[in-house]
Length: 90
Image 1: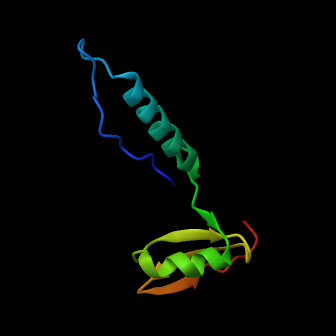
Image 2 (image 1 turned 90 degrees about the vertical axis):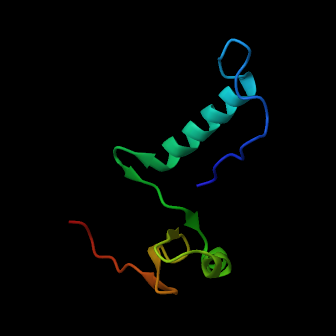
């Protein structure tokens, strides 16, 4: 999930309302959160195996991804990548 970068700008106008820049920031942040979180479930990052190998060492334990090449969910546990084995649902 890519969160928008917070800008160091005026937060509210003279009447106490959000400035247009801060309204845009909050709209972008809310849209980003809605894209990954909902009442119907969470969307995990969708990345390739090459990208996963590149970023996994810098990520903390408990991070998870959808690895699109192998079509599996991958977790980082105790410093190692572990895939979730799949069987048909239900």
